[in-house]
Image: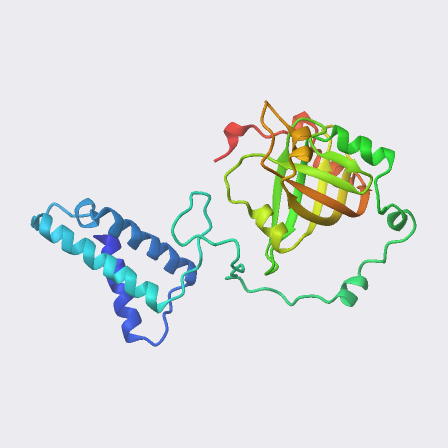
Length: 276
């Protein structure tokens, strides 16, 4: 009953005012309450006090329909903030849609303003960027069981995806080309669809125990060549497709971030039971 009255009050307020004054986050929570009331059809039963008369199942159906109608009118009047969910909820943000922001942002700095604060890189920081793999980089990839893959779609929306398998799962086809197997997952295919629309990618390889990381920037394409994928077979199953990366630049990244985070220090590992 409380959720239904809240929906009704919001609808009446919107009809009498040119623009809603309820904060966007509060409206979204209210929309979800309306969804719950309309979806279950039991809002008038769960919150009914003992002093209220029994209106019967017919009244409960009418109440649910009214709640659903109120929600539909709210949906028409106001743009609803897209929901993101791994469960595929109705209204979730689609891969091609731009992000929406409901936050007041500070002024964006320019490159020249940032360079007044940070000096330009020089010396080894510049010279370490290579166009192809050397033997140390090869050895790092061969020992790496985990990487993060950054991609961007045609609209500029970015995504980072973790990829992991036994060490050496990324094939080194030559000094300028890598092949990442695509294992079965949730079938969102965010990285795959992004690469088809925009081939620019970034990779960062990790080796447990090493405080250095290996970074690769380049262009990727999705391939299904059986002769390439056969070498990536795992547990008797070859991947359906792979991500072939042509290296644009590659370099070993300094260990400062992993040193500060103490990522590999067992004493710093979180107990999973402590998570909410």
